[in-house]
Amino acid sequence: MKLSICTISFRHHLHSMEQLAQFAKTQGFQGIELWGIHAKNLADELHYGADWLSSYGLETSMLSDYLPLDAPVSEMMAETERLSALAKRWGTNKIRTFVGKQGSSDTSKKERAELIVRLTMLCDYLESQGQKLLVETHPNTLTDNLPSTMQLLEETNHSSLRVNFDVLHIWESGMNPIVAMKQLRPYISHFHLKNIASRAQLNVFSPNNVYAAAGSREGMVPLFEGAIDYGEFLAEAVSTMEVDASLEWFGSNVMSVLAKDSQELKKALQLVQI
Image (tube, rainbow, N blue to C red; front, side, top):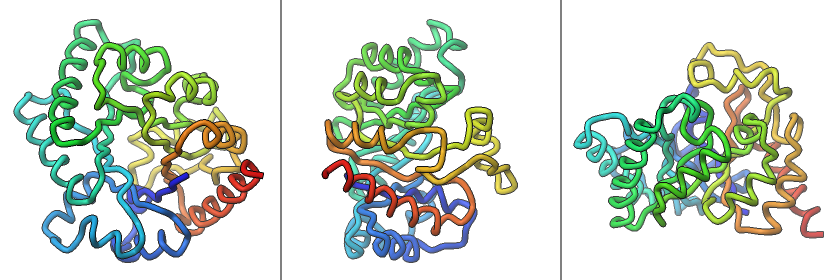
Protein backbone atom coordinates (compact mmCIF):
# COMPACT_ATOMS: atom_id res chain seq x y z
CA MET A 1 0.00 0.00 0.00
CA LYS A 2 1.09 3.53 -0.78
CA LEU A 3 -0.33 6.03 1.69
CA SER A 4 -0.66 9.82 1.35
CA ILE A 5 -1.70 12.76 3.44
CA CYS A 6 -4.13 15.27 1.89
CA THR A 7 -3.20 18.94 1.89
CA ILE A 8 -6.94 19.68 2.18
CA SER A 9 -6.66 18.41 5.77
CA PHE A 10 -4.60 21.54 6.48
CA ARG A 11 -6.95 23.98 4.75
CA HIS A 12 -7.46 26.02 7.94
CA HIS A 13 -3.89 25.75 9.24
CA LEU A 14 -0.77 27.86 8.78
CA HIS A 15 1.64 25.15 7.68
CA SER A 16 4.08 25.53 4.81
CA MET A 17 4.58 22.87 2.16
CA GLU A 18 7.99 22.23 3.71
CA GLN A 19 6.35 21.48 7.05
CA LEU A 20 3.79 19.17 5.45
CA ALA A 21 6.45 17.32 3.45
CA GLN A 22 8.66 16.92 6.50
CA PHE A 23 5.71 15.64 8.54
CA ALA A 24 4.74 13.14 5.83
CA LYS A 25 8.33 11.92 5.57
CA THR A 26 8.77 11.60 9.33
CA GLN A 27 5.53 9.63 9.73
CA GLY A 28 6.36 7.19 6.95
CA PHE A 29 3.87 8.32 4.33
CA GLN A 30 4.80 7.74 0.69
CA GLY A 31 3.00 10.67 -0.88
CA ILE A 32 0.97 13.84 -0.75
CA GLU A 33 -2.43 14.33 -2.36
CA LEU A 34 -2.39 17.94 -3.43
CA TRP A 35 -5.59 19.99 -3.31
CA GLY A 36 -6.11 21.87 -6.57
CA ILE A 37 -6.35 25.32 -5.00
CA HIS A 38 -3.07 24.71 -3.18
CA ALA A 39 -1.37 23.73 -6.45
CA LYS A 40 -2.76 26.84 -8.13
CA ASN A 41 -1.64 29.12 -5.30
CA LEU A 42 1.86 27.63 -5.43
CA ALA A 43 2.11 27.96 -9.23
CA ASP A 44 4.37 31.03 -9.06
CA GLU A 45 6.70 29.36 -6.54
CA LEU A 46 8.77 27.72 -9.24
CA HIS A 47 10.93 25.54 -6.98
CA TYR A 48 7.89 23.52 -5.90
CA GLY A 49 7.11 20.41 -7.90
CA ALA A 50 7.94 16.73 -8.35
CA ASP A 51 11.72 17.14 -7.94
CA TRP A 52 11.30 19.19 -4.77
CA LEU A 53 8.89 16.64 -3.29
CA SER A 54 11.12 13.71 -4.22
CA SER A 55 13.90 15.28 -2.14
CA TYR A 56 11.75 14.25 0.85
CA GLY A 57 11.31 10.75 -0.54
CA LEU A 58 7.72 11.55 -1.47
CA GLU A 59 5.57 11.67 -4.60
CA THR A 60 2.35 13.43 -5.53
CA SER A 61 -0.29 10.74 -5.48
CA MET A 62 -3.09 12.83 -7.00
CA LEU A 63 -4.18 16.38 -7.81
CA SER A 64 -7.71 16.82 -6.43
CA ASP A 65 -9.97 19.51 -7.83
CA TYR A 66 -13.49 20.24 -9.05
CA LEU A 67 -13.53 20.66 -12.82
CA PRO A 68 -16.38 22.93 -14.01
CA LEU A 69 -18.37 20.47 -16.10
CA ASP A 70 -21.31 22.89 -16.20
CA ALA A 71 -19.25 25.84 -17.51
CA PRO A 72 -18.93 26.87 -21.17
CA VAL A 73 -16.77 24.33 -23.01
CA SER A 74 -13.95 26.82 -23.56
CA GLU A 75 -13.80 27.60 -19.85
CA MET A 76 -14.01 23.95 -18.87
CA MET A 77 -11.18 22.97 -21.21
CA ALA A 78 -9.00 25.91 -20.18
CA GLU A 79 -9.28 24.85 -16.55
CA THR A 80 -8.58 21.23 -17.48
CA GLU A 81 -5.45 22.25 -19.37
CA ARG A 82 -4.33 24.32 -16.39
CA LEU A 83 -4.75 21.41 -14.00
CA SER A 84 -3.10 19.03 -16.44
CA ALA A 85 -0.01 21.26 -16.56
CA LEU A 86 0.08 21.49 -12.77
CA ALA A 87 -0.25 17.72 -12.47
CA LYS A 88 2.73 17.27 -14.79
CA ARG A 89 4.76 19.72 -12.74
CA TRP A 90 4.00 17.77 -9.58
CA GLY A 91 4.63 14.42 -11.23
CA THR A 92 1.20 12.80 -11.02
CA ASN A 93 -0.98 11.46 -13.81
CA LYS A 94 -4.14 11.43 -11.67
CA ILE A 95 -6.62 14.31 -11.56
CA ARG A 96 -9.68 13.93 -9.35
CA THR A 97 -13.04 15.62 -9.90
CA PHE A 98 -16.72 15.39 -8.94
CA VAL A 99 -19.40 14.72 -11.57
CA GLY A 100 -22.29 17.13 -11.39
CA LYS A 101 -23.79 19.07 -8.51
CA GLN A 102 -26.84 16.97 -7.75
CA GLY A 103 -27.59 13.35 -7.03
CA SER A 104 -28.15 10.74 -9.72
CA SER A 105 -31.86 10.45 -8.93
CA ASP A 106 -32.26 14.22 -9.40
CA THR A 107 -30.39 14.28 -12.71
CA SER A 108 -32.50 14.09 -15.86
CA LYS A 109 -31.55 11.87 -18.81
CA LYS A 110 -30.67 14.99 -20.80
CA GLU A 111 -28.49 16.37 -18.03
CA ARG A 112 -26.80 13.02 -17.59
CA ALA A 113 -26.13 12.72 -21.31
CA GLU A 114 -24.53 16.18 -21.33
CA LEU A 115 -22.30 15.27 -18.40
CA ILE A 116 -21.17 12.14 -20.21
CA VAL A 117 -20.29 14.22 -23.28
CA ARG A 118 -18.28 16.59 -21.09
CA LEU A 119 -16.50 13.74 -19.32
CA THR A 120 -15.55 12.22 -22.65
CA MET A 121 -14.03 15.53 -23.77
CA LEU A 122 -11.97 15.74 -20.60
CA CYS A 123 -10.85 12.14 -20.90
CA ASP A 124 -9.82 12.61 -24.53
CA TYR A 125 -7.65 15.57 -23.60
CA LEU A 126 -6.10 13.99 -20.51
CA GLU A 127 -5.41 10.78 -22.41
CA SER A 128 -3.42 12.86 -24.92
CA GLN A 129 -1.36 14.10 -21.97
CA GLY A 130 -0.81 10.62 -20.51
CA GLN A 131 -3.14 11.33 -17.59
CA LYS A 132 -6.24 9.85 -15.95
CA LEU A 133 -9.46 11.48 -14.77
CA LEU A 134 -10.69 10.06 -11.47
CA VAL A 135 -14.35 10.56 -10.55
CA GLU A 136 -14.98 10.42 -6.82
CA THR A 137 -17.81 8.43 -5.31
CA HIS A 138 -19.60 11.23 -3.48
CA PRO A 139 -23.13 12.26 -2.42
CA ASN A 140 -25.01 14.80 -4.54
CA THR A 141 -23.07 13.87 -7.65
CA LEU A 142 -23.68 11.40 -10.47
CA THR A 143 -21.52 8.84 -8.63
CA ASP A 144 -23.53 8.87 -5.40
CA ASN A 145 -24.24 5.13 -5.54
CA LEU A 146 -22.80 2.00 -7.12
CA PRO A 147 -25.35 1.46 -9.94
CA SER A 148 -25.05 5.04 -11.18
CA THR A 149 -21.27 4.88 -10.99
CA MET A 150 -21.16 1.66 -12.99
CA GLN A 151 -23.57 3.16 -15.51
CA LEU A 152 -21.39 6.27 -15.85
CA LEU A 153 -18.29 4.16 -16.51
CA GLU A 154 -20.14 2.13 -19.14
CA GLU A 155 -21.68 5.20 -20.81
CA THR A 156 -18.38 7.05 -21.01
CA ASN A 157 -16.45 3.90 -21.96
CA HIS A 158 -13.06 5.59 -21.83
CA SER A 159 -9.79 4.04 -20.71
CA SER A 160 -8.70 7.31 -19.07
CA LEU A 161 -11.77 7.43 -16.81
CA ARG A 162 -11.03 5.95 -13.40
CA VAL A 163 -12.54 5.96 -9.89
CA ASN A 164 -11.47 7.52 -6.62
CA PHE A 165 -13.19 5.12 -4.24
CA ASP A 166 -14.28 7.00 -1.13
CA VAL A 167 -15.02 4.21 1.32
CA LEU A 168 -17.16 6.26 3.69
CA HIS A 169 -19.35 7.70 0.95
CA ILE A 170 -19.92 4.26 -0.56
CA TRP A 171 -20.95 3.06 2.90
CA GLU A 172 -23.12 6.18 3.26
CA SER A 173 -25.04 5.17 0.12
CA GLY A 174 -26.10 1.96 1.89
CA MET A 175 -23.70 -0.31 0.00
CA ASN A 176 -21.23 -2.67 1.62
CA PRO A 177 -17.84 -1.14 0.67
CA ILE A 178 -16.25 -4.56 0.09
CA VAL A 179 -19.03 -5.60 -2.30
CA ALA A 180 -18.77 -2.27 -4.13
CA MET A 181 -14.99 -2.49 -4.32
CA LYS A 182 -15.17 -5.93 -5.91
CA GLN A 183 -17.44 -4.60 -8.66
CA LEU A 184 -15.48 -1.39 -9.23
CA ARG A 185 -12.03 -2.94 -8.84
CA PRO A 186 -11.08 -2.78 -12.55
CA TYR A 187 -11.66 0.99 -12.49
CA ILE A 188 -10.23 2.00 -9.09
CA SER A 189 -7.02 4.03 -9.09
CA HIS A 190 -7.20 5.61 -5.63
CA PHE A 191 -8.95 5.34 -2.27
CA HIS A 192 -10.04 7.96 0.26
CA LEU A 193 -10.06 6.65 3.82
CA LYS A 194 -12.00 8.32 6.63
CA ASN A 195 -14.54 7.27 9.26
CA ILE A 196 -17.53 8.48 11.26
CA ALA A 197 -18.85 7.62 14.72
CA SER A 198 -22.36 6.85 13.48
CA ARG A 199 -24.55 7.07 10.39
CA ALA A 200 -26.65 9.75 12.10
CA GLN A 201 -23.66 12.13 11.98
CA LEU A 202 -22.86 11.88 8.26
CA ASN A 203 -24.05 15.44 7.60
CA VAL A 204 -20.78 16.59 9.15
CA PHE A 205 -19.17 15.75 5.81
CA SER A 206 -21.51 17.92 3.72
CA PRO A 207 -19.39 20.42 1.75
CA ASN A 208 -20.97 23.55 3.25
CA ASN A 209 -19.99 22.29 6.71
CA VAL A 210 -16.71 20.52 6.15
CA TYR A 211 -15.11 23.39 4.23
CA ALA A 212 -16.21 26.01 6.78
CA ALA A 213 -13.61 26.98 9.34
CA ALA A 214 -16.32 27.18 12.02
CA GLY A 215 -18.13 24.04 10.85
CA SER A 216 -18.98 21.18 13.21
CA ARG A 217 -16.51 18.30 13.50
CA GLU A 218 -18.81 16.23 15.70
CA GLY A 219 -18.63 12.56 14.78
CA MET A 220 -15.32 12.65 12.92
CA VAL A 221 -13.18 9.92 14.44
CA PRO A 222 -9.83 8.22 13.76
CA LEU A 223 -9.86 5.57 11.07
CA PHE A 224 -10.16 2.50 13.30
CA GLU A 225 -12.58 3.96 15.84
CA GLY A 226 -15.70 4.50 13.73
CA ALA A 227 -18.69 2.71 12.28
CA ILE A 228 -16.83 1.34 9.24
CA ASP A 229 -14.69 -1.75 9.84
CA TYR A 230 -11.47 -0.73 8.14
CA GLY A 231 -9.59 -3.80 9.36
CA GLU A 232 -11.90 -6.00 7.32
CA PHE A 233 -12.01 -3.65 4.34
CA LEU A 234 -8.24 -3.16 4.05
CA ALA A 235 -7.58 -6.88 4.47
CA GLU A 236 -9.74 -7.53 1.41
CA ALA A 237 -8.31 -4.59 -0.56
CA VAL A 238 -4.60 -5.27 -0.15
CA SER A 239 -5.04 -9.00 -0.77
CA THR A 240 -6.57 -8.40 -4.19
CA MET A 241 -5.00 -5.23 -5.65
CA GLU A 242 -2.34 -2.56 -5.42
CA VAL A 243 -3.73 0.06 -3.05
CA ASP A 244 -2.93 3.76 -3.45
CA ALA A 245 -4.79 5.64 -0.72
CA SER A 246 -5.04 8.92 1.15
CA LEU A 247 -6.01 9.50 4.76
CA GLU A 248 -8.63 12.23 4.46
CA TRP A 249 -9.01 13.90 7.85
CA PHE A 250 -11.19 17.00 8.27
CA GLY A 251 -11.20 17.26 12.06
CA SER A 252 -8.95 18.93 14.61
CA ASN A 253 -5.51 17.82 15.83
CA VAL A 254 -4.61 16.98 12.25
CA MET A 255 -1.02 15.88 12.67
CA SER A 256 -1.58 13.76 15.77
CA VAL A 257 -4.61 12.00 14.25
CA LEU A 258 -2.86 11.32 10.94
CA ALA A 259 0.23 10.04 12.74
CA LYS A 260 -1.89 7.69 14.87
CA ASP A 261 -3.96 6.48 11.92
CA SER A 262 -0.81 5.81 9.93
CA GLN A 263 0.65 3.68 12.72
CA GLU A 264 -2.61 1.79 13.26
CA LEU A 265 -2.90 1.18 9.54
CA LYS A 266 0.61 -0.27 9.39
CA LYS A 267 -0.25 -2.61 12.27
CA ALA A 268 -3.43 -3.72 10.47
CA LEU A 269 -1.50 -4.43 7.27
CA GLN A 270 1.09 -6.46 9.18
CA LEU A 271 -1.69 -8.66 10.52
CA VAL A 272 -2.96 -9.22 6.98
CA GLN A 273 0.52 -10.29 5.81
CA ILE A 274 0.88 -12.69 8.75
